[in-house]
Length: 384
Image (cartoon, rainbow, N blue to C red; front, side, top):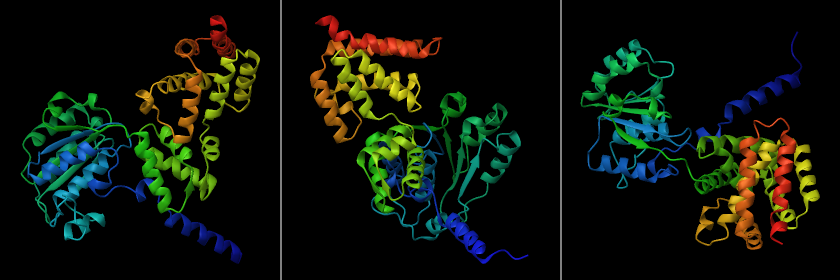
């Protein structure tokens, strides 16, 4: 029995959408050193090595997830095989080697996932493959991701090849857990430690992506996404896609905190205002309102500790640069910092920190947080 005509159309549209959509983390993945975000020192070092023809035979890229380790490895492999390097030591994207790389058909670049290829036999196959010279370009580059997953026997089998590979072979090892790699491997590699990407850099890149996708987004919304990503650009782009699916082409701060289950800054500002007035009842009512919104007490008290810290750094123009929020929120912090004395902030942070440490062991968690709120509310009262 044939399906209704409108069902055929619905299936075609759904399949078309799925095929055309590319997640931002892949669509906006850097393809040159210049487009790598937040790793300027590493990209400069790699470009200088290419410029001066001082290429090592083994590199180790280590750092947190989503900061560009594998991406930089691919860009490096593409650049050293480019036949028409630019004056800025960037690939031309026009020669046969670059075209092959962009089309995912390059035989010069070999990627191995050590998580699923971690045996001695897998390494033996790799060492056999290393002997084959490249067909186009000068180097065969072997990118081994999550290299810490190799077994100890595989590591030992890899040692000799890693120390004395053929002239055309370059190894780039990538890992999130450098401490799991044996010292004999570390001593044979040039080690590059990738940093967590700063919140400002993530926000700027997200704004570029939003502009490219014709998405209108508030700066505070981008800042919350960047904070939630915890220094990982890939996580930030994934969260951005999720928010756009939720909000459409206009992304607001309210949409972001609602979708990501983030506690609004406004609650903390209101709480501190009530603490300064010694208003215990009002403070407890705000805490109850937060619980009604689905947040637990631990979430509140850790956020409160961070808020006191942020108010503290705003009291001195020298330390205000440590505050990683948007300009509008920063002004609120400055106003509140002017009203808070150092003794109050230090005492409040101590009480909140003690509550945080005791939270897991407490039998009555709500009472523990409420007791901390009462103590903070009485700090200025004692002084009076």
